Image: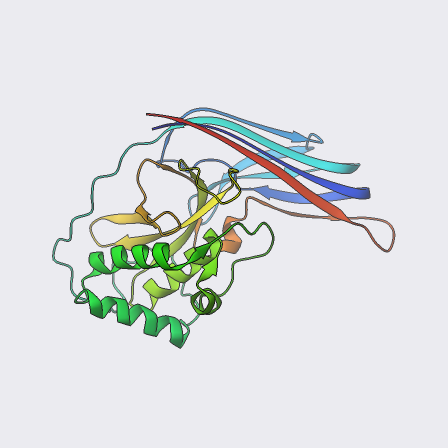
Length: 277
């Protein structure tokens, strides 16, 4: 599938500010797509700008600014081609739960303990499918898709998995965290992914940055399931950044300083996505 994406972000400040160093995570992951074109525009123009690979294999852009400004705008435009992934076949994996496995990649760090209510939810689903790993992932995806009230929430970090499970309501990042914790309760290694998806079915009719989980499967590697849309991830998704938790996938990370006692800031953004077979 061919994706053409334009993502514009603008921060406005009520008084002049001095921008600190920023990290931008807005470049499609190498190996996941074929990049035809990529353009990054930043205003005010940075004093220094460099690309590096972070600890999780993402290409990130470090920028350093000079002088004062009342606005920071970041625009990416790119064209990529994605390839459909082969359907995962169960090669006879042992039943869940799994113990710590040698195949767990070194890029996965030990997460906090899974809350008891989330663990109970995960074990119940696993029991319903005879503890078969692939069937569990498919049932977890279908259950969250069918039973959660999915909505857009612009501000704030992801909710805890327990809060999303209790309310069965959340944004894509909340559902992703619940999915990952349910997997971890059964010994499945997972990571948080941010990016774009082809299906425009958001409640407000607009396009947004998306989030979904990936799970590491022995002899297969990382594979994604998008519970927000009820599908396995294939050529309809473009990953930007993957990390053990949401905090390390934020598209724009940085700060500012100012003279005075108070200041207000606002954020506006727009995402345009065009796809073709």
